[in-house]
Amino acid sequence: MEGQIAPPPADKQLAKTRRPRPAHLMCGTPFWGFAGLLACSYLAYISFARVRRGDFDWPRDVWSLVTYAIWVLLMAGLIGETRCWRERIFFTLILVNFTLGFVFAAWGNIPDAWARNAREIAAGLWALAAVVSGVLMFSSGRGLKRGAGRHV
Image (cartoon, rainbow, N blue to C red; front, side):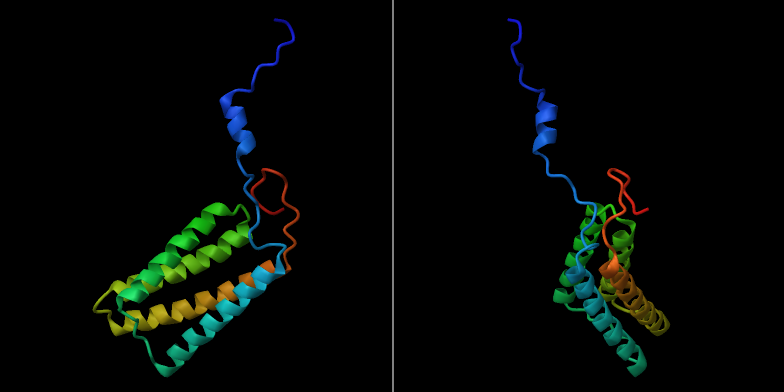
């Protein structure tokens, strides 16, 4: 029959039902930038305080390991979810920090020099993540060309 409308192919229907992946999870929403700034600043303060006191020990209980593992998985998932390079930097800094915590919490007999260096690195990473979060707080989330995958 002439003029009969055929249903679209299955792959086109699937493409229509998929939710578009947002380019930004934190840019343009000051709440998340502020929350990240506050949390990372607090963790940087705690880390610097431990270094200042000479407390380089890592918790080695099961709950700490599970908590670190959950945070590592969450951050790895968030890195894959965003297409914004600023957010990827932020989530990568946190991922590295929690991975460092997981490794040192799982490691039974850490040399003192390594533990001290790891604590200093962790404090610096938290401070850097706080700065990046502050930048995200004031980022508009605009300037991303559709499909470009990064800010211009």
